[in-house]
Amino acid sequence: MSLIPSFFGSHRSNILDPFSLEIWDPFKDFPFSSEPQFARETSALVNTRVDWKETPEAHVFKADLPGLNKEEVKVEVEDDRVLQISGERKVEKEEKKDTWHRVERSSGKFLRRFRLPENAKMDQIKAAMENGVLTVTVPKVEAKKPDVKAIEISA
Image (cartoon, rainbow, N blue to C red):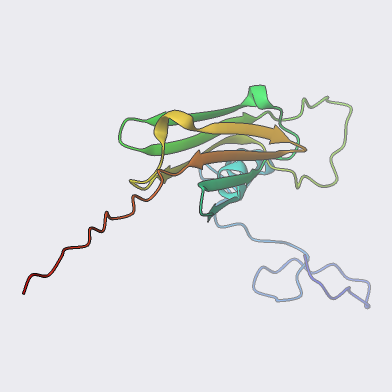
């Protein structure tokens, strides 16, 4: 749609005209078109933001998952030290009598994977969900200090 309104009363319809009121969609007839339904299904995959910080005691992951409860989220660890956070945000049920003016909230499946470092205590991982924020805490193995032994110097 043109950002500049027509002051002369005519509706333009030429797709080559930059002020045309028609929008040409090159993906219109593709099986995965740019329809809002497709956008809603894929945007959750991209929009799952995760922070990873390392403290002296642990690796801490925080994921923003607004609108989800803990039953809709899975936290798993694979044998090869991979932390996996996944889940699904369901699409809101549409009724035929409703008219949507804007759809910005994402829905669909999401999956994030992180390879944990060697100093992670794999058997002590904890996860908690509060106010739409998932916190996964992976304790670290205490760094072993090298044993220093004094050696007496003989004459």
